[in-house]
Each structure stands twice: as structure tokens, then as C-alpha cells.
Amino acid sequence: MNPPSRKGTPDVRRLLIDSAKHDAPSPRALRKARAAVLLAATAAATSTSVATAASTSVIRWAVILKWLGIGVVAGTATIGAVKLVSPNAQAPAQVPTAPTATMSVVASPLVSAPISNAPAATASQTARIETTPRSAVVSAPVESEPEPAPASSAPPAASSNPSLAEEVAVLDEARKAVAAGRGADALVALDRYQRDYPRGRLGHEAAFVRMQALILTGNRAAAQQLAEQFLRASPSSPLAPRVRELLR
Amino acid sequence: MAIAFASPLATPAAAGCRQTSRSDAARIAAMFDDHFVPVWRFLRRLGVPTGDVDDHAQEVMLVASRKLDQIEYGKERGFLLGVAYRIASDARRAIASRRETDDDMLEEREDPSPDPEMLADQLHARAVLDQLLQGMPLDFRAVFVLTELDELSMAEISELLGLPPGTVASRLRRGREYFDEKVRRLQARFAQAGGVE
View 1 (cartoon, each protein chain N blue to C red):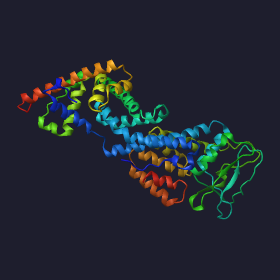
View 2: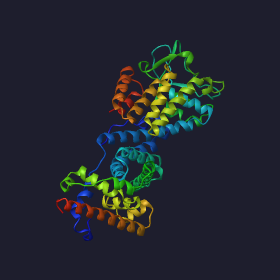
View 3: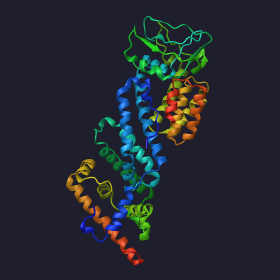
View 4: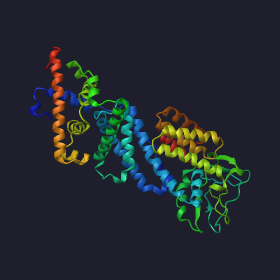
């Protein structure tokens, strides 16, 4: 690519030009950038679906459910799928047996698919909630839970449990920061979440977002450590496969 | 150079935006694997400081991810390099503003006095190359780099930068003149120092 007009300089010219063709980022920088870009892309997709869902109060409730992924454990350790009536339903098709001492919740991605259909919910439509194995759930005092299926009352939107709505808001902030590739900002939001809600009901989801944020900031070792703790504590959490993949 | 990535889209969690998003994620991953290094290299040669190149290259990919639906299949490279050009342009302006100087002044502070044998060392050769490119106006530089280093055709560059082919040709000619003059000076310096011509 050296025309004759540049005769007399081709060797040095070629050396200089060719040197640039082998220039490349460090493997570490490459790995970090790839993780950041892909995390941001996928987080943006899920954030978008959350933002859309939050446009109405009924849907806001669906958002909260999405975050919570409520697993109902009724009395015994019987595990199976149950149906919860949509908050704005006129008549419940099935109402889960009320929990006794505690109600177990887990941040479960398994519920997001049906709940994302909430905008089209009708009176007869039910939201399918998948139960989670007892060992995978995090117990929380029943009195702090939102009422999941008040058949005839107004929708138990975020306002019925402002602290829960706030938890969702803080975590959404963290997720949006991850989506934008701002890992440090996400960590700030997550620290706030941890400080303000030390017994928060979205602990699993917060931990997962923290792992993403740590990777974004290049702190893969800390993400790995957190993931291992997570998997030790909740090996059968619905989030566990995603946690394993994250750090594979 | 793939690393494991946990895609929430691969789980039922995102079932609402499922098919499209999953294919988008795959496309973004492929785009990254195919084009990140060339984008990084382009930014580097456009004069983005070493310490900022990683971040700016990542920014290019993030912009592309957000505008994925605007990128035609098969035109990813052009889109990415176009974004990189704009980001490099902004970065250079910010640097110039911060230092209250211009490219010529930057160049004057530098002392490209390599030993010819040192050019065999690619790291050193790249440092010299960057010094020689430093004073070249960005418009010429982008066309020069895309032609000489990335080996794009003038038609491709014309489309990528949104310039008429005549303008691309003119910028390339002036960029080559600038660069070759610098190389000649460098060789003269070698000769003066008793080096090899």
C-alpha cells in the first residue's frame, strides 16, 4: 500500500503502519469491556420491561411482584404451582391458603413472564405464581408482606406498602446504573439499599445486581466471593443458575 | 475471546421481550467480538489518550447496543467506526480545551527521536507513529487511518463518515502528504544521527 511516490520512505513507513495493526487492548480490558457491554445490554432490556410495567398502579403492583417472586408455602412443605388472583380481579379463581407463621419470599425471575402480561389482565385473569422450594426461599415476617391477593379490594399497589415500593425504586436505580454501564453508581444505590433495608425483601435480587455491578467495576474477585456466598446460602434459588453463569 | 456471560434474557425472567432481546443480545455479543478491537485501535490512532481508550471503546459499543435497531445487518463496522470518530472528536476537543493548547503545540512538546533499530520494537514503533500522527488534523487523520491501517476503500469511508468521495480523496491525499513528510523528517534525523536510511 505504498505508492511509488513515497519511494525512499517505504521501510520506515511500513514499519510504522504495520506496528499499529497489531495494537490491541489488554485481555483484561477486553474481558471487562465485554462483560460491561453485555451486562448493560441485557439489563437495559429488563429495565425497559420494568419501566413499561410501572406505568399504572396495577402494573406497579405487578412490578413489585416481579421483584418479589412470591413463593407461597402453605403449612407443610408441599411444593407445587398455585394461582394467585390478579389484584384487580373481581372474583378470585383460586386463593392460596394463607400462610401461618411466615410467608416466604424470594426474588424470583420465574414470575416475571406471566406478570409482564399484567397490562392485559382482565377480571378473570389470574397471575400464575410458581412456588419455590422451601430451602431456596428467604423468610420474612408475614406482617411486612404485601397482601398478594385481595380479591375484591382496591389493588394493593405500592402505596399500600410504601417501604416495599421504595425498595423496588432503589433496586431499579441500581439496575438502571448497571444498564448504563455505571457500576460504581449501581454500587452506591446498592449500599443505600443495604443500609436502609438491612432485612429487605429483595435481598437475592440485590445480591445479583451487586455481582453485576462489581464485574462492571472490574472487581471480579469480589463478585466471585459474593456469588459463592449466595450459592452456599441458597443453592436452589431461582437466581442460582444466573449467578453461576455470571461468573463462569 | 468469549467470556461467560449470564444473560437474564436466557431465563424466563425476560419472557416479555424474549425472542427479540435474546437475538439482540447475541447480535451485540457478536458485534463486540468482531469489532471491539478495531474500534479500540481506531480510537487509539485518532489520538484518544491511552488511559481513556478502553472507556471510549466501551462507550462506542454501548451506544451501538442502544441503537441496535438502527444498525443494518452487515453495516455494524461502519456504524461503530462512525460513532468512534465522533467520540474521538469530542475527546480531542475536551483535551485541547483542558490543556488550552492545540495539536501543534502538543506536537512541539514531543521529541520523536527514535533509533531506527527501535522501530523494530512494535511498542516503540507505535509510539513513534502516534507522535507523527499527533499533529495531523482529525479530518485527515481519520481518513488516513481508515485507509492505511484499516484498509477500507474510499467508498466505504465516504459512507462511514458521510462525506462525498471527492472530499475523502482530498483528505486522504493531504493526510498522506502530511504523514510522508513526517516520515521523511524522521529518516533525515536517523541519517543525521548516523543511523540507517
